[in-house]
Length: 305
Image (cartoon, one colour):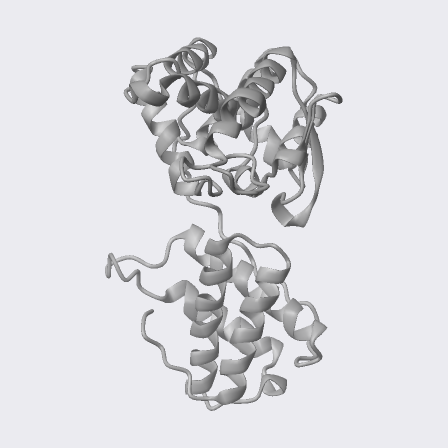
C-alpha cells in the first residue's frame, strides 16, 4: 500500500518514535526506514476501523489485521496475494512495534504469536573453491592504472572480510580500522545482526591481505581526514554499501564467473566451503553470528559444481 496518510496525531508521533528507537538499537538504514512503513499500514487500518487510541488495540485486532494482510493482493501482480517473505516482514515489524510500545508504556498487551509463512525459496548462487581463488586473482586486473596497485590491495582486503571471514555487508560497512586485531588475528564485529557483538578469527593469508591494506593502501585513501572507517572511498569517506557491492560485482566479472554472486553470496560460499572441509557446524555458526543452528544448517544442503 502506498500514500496512506494517518490523521491521528498519537499514531504519527508513535511512528516517529518507533523509527528513532530502531535507529538507536543499531538497525540498518533499510530497516529503520522500511519497518515503520509496515506499521503505518497497520495503524492506517486501525484508524479506518475507528480505533484511534493505542490502548484500544486488542490482540484480536492484531489477528484480524494479520488475516487481512494474508488476503491482500500483491500490488505488482493483482492476481496473487502477498508473498511469504513480504508477510514475514510485516510480522517482524509488528512484533518489534509491540515491543517498542510496551517499553514506552504506550500499550499493555500480552505477547502475540503470529504464524510466519514458509519463506519463498530462491536458488542461492555460491562459488566453488576454485572460483573463489580466481576471484582473488582477479583483484590484480585493474583498469585504473594510476591507482591499480592500491585498488588491488583494497579489493583483496574487501574479499577477505566478505568471503574469508563471512561477514555481512552491514557489518563490513560499520567496521572501523580498530576492529582489526592483527596480533590476535580477530575481527571485532560490533554491529552484528540482532545487535550482537562477536569475534571472527582469520588465518595467515587473511592476515597478509589485511596488513597490506592497513599499511599500504588505506593510508593512500585517507586524504588527510581523520575517518575511523576501515574501508574508505577514494575521497577519504566511509565506503558505502553500494560501492562495496559494485566492487564485488566487478571482480566477479573480471574473474569470468557467470553467476549472480553478491557480497552475501560470498558469505554463503565460505560457509559451504568450511562445511565441506569438515569444520564443525557449531564453529561455523559462531563465526557467522547465527542466532539459531537452523540458520547454519541450510548450508548442509548446498553442493558446489
